[in-house]
Image 1 (cartoon, rainbow, N blue to C red):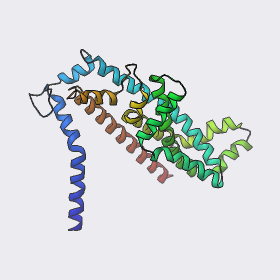
Image 2: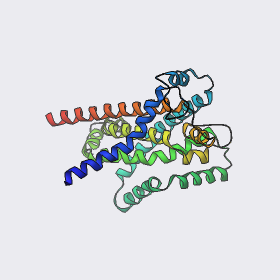
Image 3: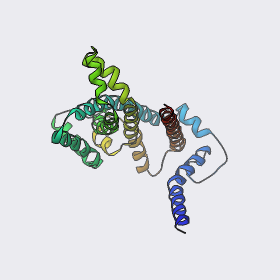
Image 4: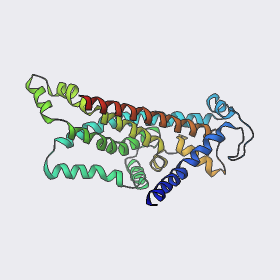
Length: 266
C-alpha cells in the first residue's frame, strides 16, 4: 500500500506539473485566440510567430531575451570559472567566508536583488536600459556558475597543475591546458544554467529595464497579461521553448551516461 500511494502521489504531482504544458502544446495547433477553444487543427499561430506580421513587438522581445541571455551566460561563465578557481585555492576560514558570500545572492529573493541593483544604478547616475539589464543578469548568474564549477575543481587532482609547472608550462598555459579541460563540464553546466535563469528572470529585469521601450519575453508577457489576455502566439512559443529544453536535457543526460560508461570501462 505504501508503494501504491507513493507512486500515485508521484504520478499526480507529475500530472499537475506537466498538464498545463501539454494543454498549451495542444492548443498551439489551433487558430482560436482564447485558450481552451478548439477550432480545428492549424499551424497558423506558428506561421504568424515566425512571419512577424503584427507581432513585431513579440519578435523583438524574443531577440532581446536571447541576446541578453547569451551575453550574460558567456560573461558569467568566464567570471564564475575564474572566481571558482580563486576560491578553490583559498584555505581555511577565508575560503568558507567567500564561499558563503557567493551563496547569499542565490538565497536572496529576486525582488530584493532587483531593488538593490535599481538603487545602485540610480545612485551612480546610470541610465537604465539594455546595458543595465545585461549587467544585472551577469551579477545574479555568476554565483550559479561558481556553484557548478566548484565540484569539478574539488574532484581534480591538484598535483596535475603542479606537474605542468614543473615540466616548464607557464601558469597561463597550465590553466588553459590542464585546469580548463578538467572543469569544462562544470563550465558548460554553468553556462546552460545561467542562460536558462536569464531567460526566465522577471523580478530583476523589471527593476533594471528602464523606460526606453526595451522589452524582454518576461516583461512582454507581464504587460500582455495586464491588458486582459495573452497573445495567442505565446502558445507556440512556449511549446517550442519547452521542446528545445527537453531535447537539450536528453542530449546532456545521454552524453553523461556515455562518459560514465567510458570511465567505468577504463
